[in-house]
Amino acid sequence: MSIDLPADLSSQIESLVAGGEFADETAVIRAALDHLHHYRGEVAAIKEGLADEQAGRVIPVEQAAAEIRSRFGFSTPS
Image 1 (cartoon, helix red, strand yellow):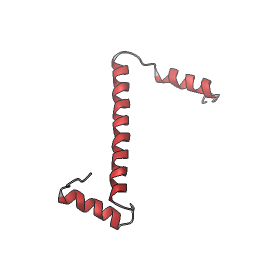
Image 2 (cartoon, rainbow, N blue to C red):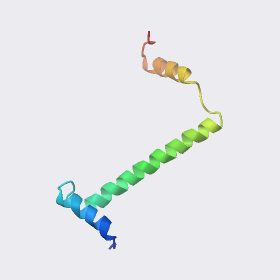
Image 3 (cartoon, rainbow, N blue to C red):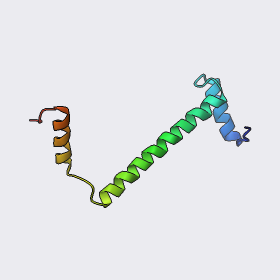
Image 4 (cartoon, one colour):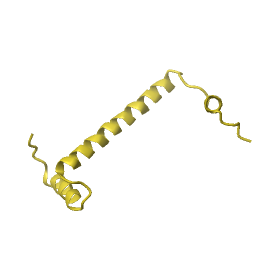
C-alpha cells in the first residue's frame, strides 16, 4: 500500500523516526492506529455509560463503593 500524505504529516512522521522514538514510518502509523482504536473504545465506553445513566441504569456512588468493598474485602472507611 502506498499513501500520499500532506507535507506536514510526512514531516511529523519523519521527525519521530529521526528522533529515535520509532524504528520506521510503519511503526509510527501502527502506534497512531493503536491509539485511535483505544480512543474509539474509550468514547464507546463513555457513550455506553451516558446511555445507562439516561436510562436509569445507575446506582448511588455510596452503594457502588459498598459493593466494591464487599466484593474485594476492603474495610469500611472511618
